[in-house]
Image 1: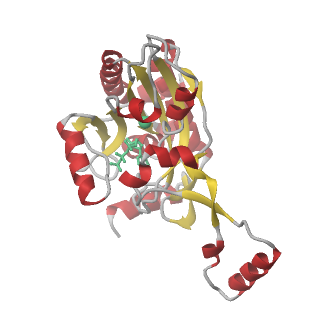
Image 2 (image 1 turned 135 degrees about the vertical axis):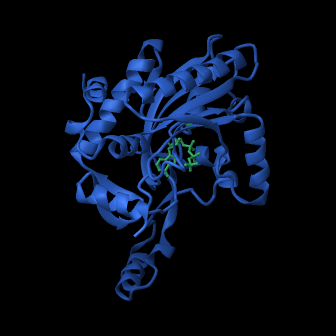
Length: 302
Ligand code: ATP
Ligand code: ZN
């Protein structure tokens, strides 16, 4: 049995995660959820005073927006779309026959207007663009969503459905890069305040294919993505628990995010992988939060 399987098994045995029969798709216990909600409280304690507009989108997004985002170009291997039965009565009879015979009934499903949200900020950009030009100070948004990524794994820190909390800044290049730096500093402080060992490293997204390698190299060379890493499965290979992404004016141009004078906005987002952070805490301090160090408990529970 490898390390990962044993961590997952320990989490199942403790009842923190609940098995569904699919790798990367788990139920969560009340104790697990309490840790996530307390950590979210900590995020809000750090970021709450800045007056971010809170928006909560469901875990599915407008498929047309998903297409415009270019996700299928960069990450086709991770994408998920919602399909449904759209046939007539005869089609239904054929469907039932197919199921009875153990055939592949999913072939008859058709794409709906909904794609599964791949990152919490994806539905935001078209929403803000639709409002019209941004004020000179830009905008700041507080998001949280379940996200889907088709990356089945028995590492509990790589799930197919997980939550991402994000702050997104839309504004001038200066405002946006300052925002990202501020959160890199705060991110480290925040994790240290709950007893986690952190390091920050330059990173790249898992772009698909050979052309994707160039995108990934470019992203690294230009320091567009940083990750805050914390040991979960292994101390030698810590896990990305936060990411800090600067999109330059790429999303601004794609979605038409602009100031009243017509100048394209820059954007950046900081994201917390909430399950990964909860797991890092359980690995560091033990599977029973009541037994966590007093200072950590105080930071999270007050
Ligand atoms: P990785 O390199 O580990 O696949 P990523 O670069 O794809 O992560 P982002 O797209 O930056 O991740 O997502 C933001 C945050 O969401 C990450 O920092 C991480 O904490 C979390 N996250 C990403 N993928 C997963 C996953 N499969 N399961 C749980 N959390 C995840
Ligand atoms: Zn984002």
